[in-house]
Image 1 (cartoon, helix red, strand yellow):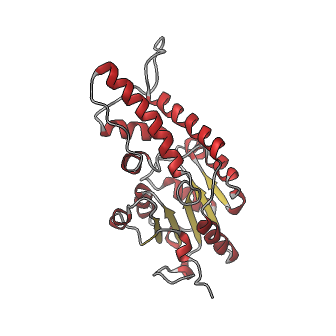
Image 2: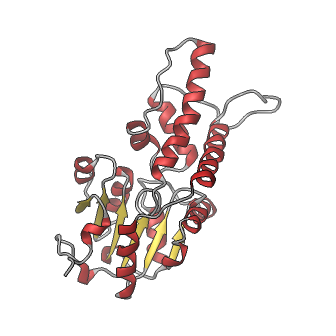
Length: 251
């Protein structure tokens, strides 16, 4: 592979985030969030009077929901607007909007968009993973989403990964969300490797921070949203636009 200051000879495993690194689904998540949040904000504006300010599918997504479990995304974005909702409806409170309800709406909308559009894997990432596997380096896919396995299957890349740790496993094991490195550390543990000799590949700033906190020997940022400087500031060792940049030079 290209040098790029990357200690490839010392890497014993690689962990990749799914949405935005492996599959082109970050934009689908962002659209689903926007539709759900905008509908809620508009209803609130009509009923309670505050001016309607729509969800920004770039910056609000990157800052408040990207890389986080759905419920965390709801809480984080609403808190940025000074808004708070109950976690769940109490007895007899059928019409109360809750964190759980907005999260469920987002999940339904995301799955509907996936069914209609399909899922595409990034060619550069697929080539990168295949190169790692050809050298005997185990590779893991991680995601805070509970739909990770479905997304990987839809993109026809589920067979490329030795380990998958997703939102279902995170909930079962009680793993804390990013920027806590728990998801990444669990993936490395399952591969029988040491994080100090492993790499994390992330497209989210909060994921870069998690990789640094986890003591990973290499943190690679994939900048698909104009956050290169923020990734470097959070500790990314290398930032690329696509993992194809780290493949061997042709010829």
